[in-house]
Image 1 (cartoon, one colour):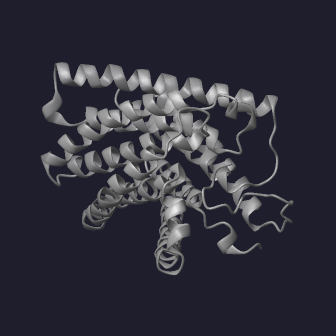
Image 2 (tube, helix red, strand yellow):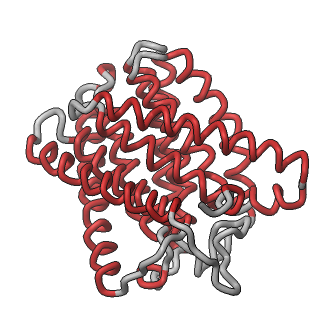
Length: 318
């Protein structure tokens, strides 16, 4: 196996995101043992990445700073919230709240650093992580709210939900559409950001005190977001078929996460009154599981890096 440190870029946090969201998806579909195994794996990788992140801060501050201003740095926030969401569903609200606090403290620091260094255009799919990280906070906060940990968490989740949608619009203006055919995997975040927004919306719909008009608005917005996420899924899949990109790249974890997130969003949105969405979600979940397995094959398979290969670059983007 190639050296672990070669893969420890900010983009490597998407491995936790991908593993964690598949664990979340397996929970309501009745595969609890497999879900818990993936949760344990995601937690282990999160701890390893957190330790390396702290070590890099002490050992090489300039490199840490250079990495922290790139969009993939925000995978740290989303990885933490995905892990917290699964722990909350497991009945561990204390641990989930602790992770929410960690994510909420890190999020504004990284978000401001990333936004300050945005380019006006021509950015890869990682630019959408500003939305993903913000919606991750919304999902974890509303999950804890529904678990009875405080109504204020629902209000905070709603605020993050709205901000996340605004950030998506800003990111879309800067996204290089050519990444659909040339991206190394993170172009899928363009759809994954909408999928996690739909998941946040579906969870917010379940908050009782937002009945009536508020519920109707949330329901409409959520279904629109899910429809757009599924449209992105189809477009991105067609682009992969038209311009195949075989071979492993750490950014392929940023492909698996949107696959899993779209499945979970469909499962959650269809839980109330659309059984067809639940069926679709189950199918898409196993697509994500298959993709997750293929990327792990790429991780463990020995390979030689080509001259000029940037897979170990601090930014995690080209």
